[in-house]
Length: 149
Image 1 (cartoon, helix red, strand yellow):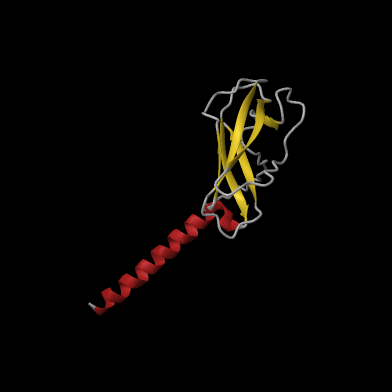
Image 2: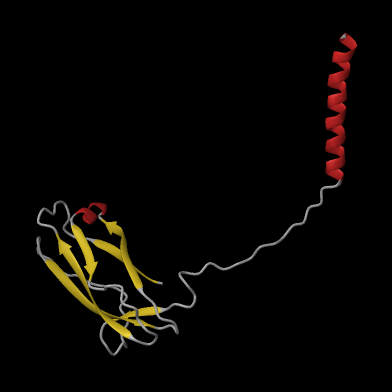
């Protein structure tokens, strides 16, 4: 009996070693190089924000100036589809400074998921509302991100 117990672990170890040796010789590796380019949004979509309906002067910044607590202010712009396919838009904000400003200011727009056809512009109002209970915010900045899909 003792010989059988000794024989069994030796046989098991030998079989494991044999399987490892055979499998390592039959393993073939192939290395594949990778390359690519990361683009913003869909490469087939493109738009710009303009100051007026002639779509000649692009908007790069909105200066909201002075806004009274409890009031809102409007920025009117045109967004023109510069691509060859119809598109819709979405919007959100980021990078609020000071970060607490997001609790007291709210940005909305009157865009209602309209499809913008190629080479067409859409008149859009942006509304910035300052809450009645605004505290600790005297100046602010933030980024508006408009995405096409």
